[in-house]
Image (cartoon, rainbow, N blue to C red):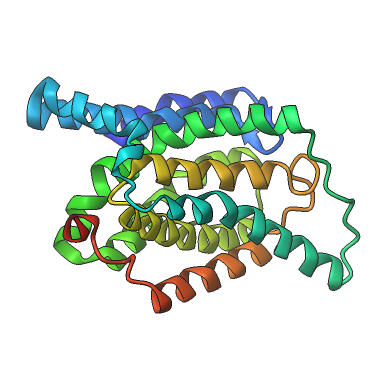
Length: 245
């Protein structure tokens, strides 16, 4: 169903070479598709009440018993981006200093949060719990991460990304899904938390360091992979949220 819903947006992106933002082709509007697919499937399985219950999880902050987990949800990607910027500078890449106008950053954060929420209603709110209850949190996160990355391949091609870019970006994206699932579980299955991490990731990419210029998915991907591995080793957040409640 997700592919069928996404096809019109992919075709629009193929026909019209339009950028909504630097690096974002017209097909990026398909971010709404995971939410639409999840709501339709929930309605088919559990009726209108099922779809309504899923939609209510958009702002499920009350699920978060330990609000301290919101700190890594907000700060992770700025720290990763700063580390990536510092590494590139230290290894000789001539990077301009970051330019982050406050009002533009807040506007982009709002846009990316809405887009991230649309995606996470599907990836986190609908798909994650059944998969991790059956196979475990880490296998579920890896499986969702691979599908999540592959779903972006058409927009990436329409943005004229190279094969190497897409390969390293995929490593970072799968690692990011492992991190998102870990934080989702640590916050009692909060879709809001997942959407916040998702939004911060997109925001930091778009601002790195100026309109996404010089963004290197190889460096960011390796840092995210290291963070994901460290999180798995040091925390219990890869325990399914259902078992933690």
